[in-house]
Length: 195
Image (cartoon, rainbow, N blue to C red; front, side, top):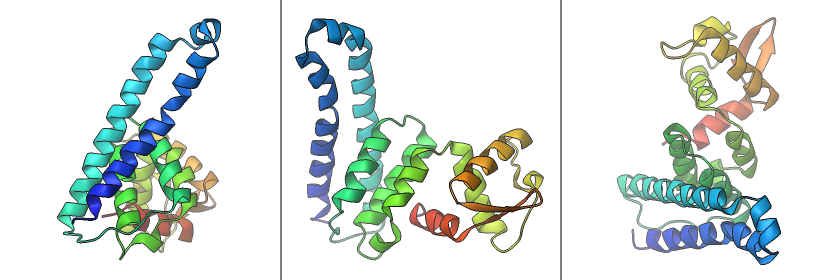
């Protein structure tokens, strides 16, 4: 696992680079800085750093659990947008998806499962979207089902419907007569976001 540590440094450095936007605003002068509310901006920057730290720690845990001896290099086209998206995500369910996606990108056996298109889709996910898509992949891969079949005890039927609409617009599910089925893109996305 000796090669995993340099990636944690790269993640830290990338997060610092992403955080430079606030500094850029400060450089334009106080009126612009006041317009952007740097007191609030400082809090947001702090939250982003905490989010990235949590995601990085979880990624390292996943790689340790796999007993990965050497991590694969991650393409910038995947690493940078992934880190930018993850830094703004405080929800634990979504941070878990980001950490798993990054771990899979770093795993030589799974790195080809991670596509840059997945980052844009997951960035627009609500945690319910991830639950609904995973349930479709696990239970209803081949069948069209009604939204009610995807309901969970913690998720209302209307929330499932909203998720299905979002998943449909993202190409993750197919729709026919108000019944839904996971699309090939959705199957591959679930695979890329799974441990």
